[in-house]
Length: 466
Image 1 (cartoon, rainbow, N blue to C red):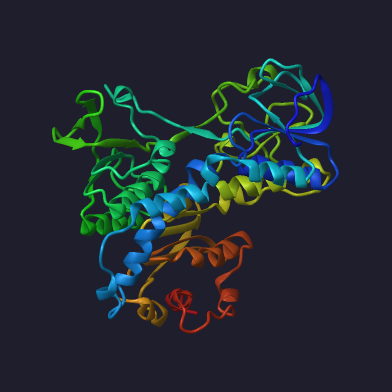
Image 2: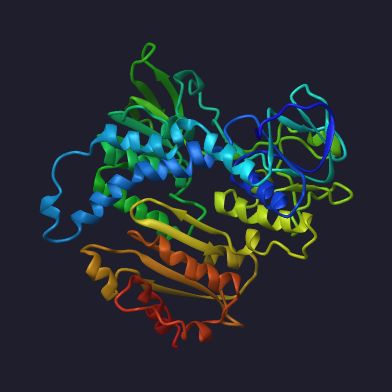
């Protein structure tokens, strides 16, 4: 059995949090011969596996397939009828293992990681308490991988209407007829489009900032907004929800916007951001402030904790709150713990991110504005993603923009953004170029096959004069 409840004992490494980052850190340490314990109070596999990336992308997939087919002349006429929503939800349940983690328990056992069920908290130098049990002492390291939690904005009446967060939305048992979405970031936009394409007739997205996807290049949010409005999804930017109430116990929700407009919905999805889950993990016992991101150095060691024994990875660091970045950080931390000389280079300068809407927004590294804020002189190259033969082969109306942000002095790529339908697999080539600091003069020798959408790289190099 991987799960156990011992008296006080010692191991080499204790990992607090069993999401993707925690799993990777624990498994990597155990694979290299360290006696490792993983502490988790909920499901091993974490937010991403059960309430985030996996179920949300599963819910998005049917609409993406239908939209792709509708763009192909001769096939569009064959796309008839409605989506089989029960079948889609059943597939979602399968992809989340019906919210059970027996498979992840087996994975831990196969890697020699022992699982301790409960809430782990720091209890001083290299010590972890699990619930009210005796402390566990880590001979070598403790890794915090406690993730993040959804933020509920202080809107009068919002808590009382029992709003959805990402967990409630991705685990929904039916598709609401009307959905109000608060927040124009990746989570809100993905779920807005997923539910609309699954049958929500009225979907309204409300974003308080001036545009959607504020982390990305401005044109990305503008293109997503235009696509949403063509589909019939209402988008309100520069707008806030000022009050909300629900009629009766299960009646409709009625919201008032800062514009004075009234919006009626069956459910409200709150996707206005997340905060690191560090309020109650014992940070005060090691001299850190609870409720704040755990600052780390480039070896993922907690800044301000002497001895280098405390590491933090994933969302709780506030660096790059994305599953793949947390797993990357976990690999680096485990390497450091096991004596390897490695450093984190990606979490600040080469963060990859994809918003899986249609059009998709794929980005890595710096935007043009971020480069300017850092005082980096850059050259910006924009080309149309859809104007290559590979895009024409896929169907009609494939639009989007590919932007390269190039360091003026060295010619090295420091950022890239690619928008378009189904372009997520193009991102990794840009990520390699950014992470490896490849100059454009060398990228010209990486020849994309014909006819692929990746030929957009040739257009970008042409724009650079190469």
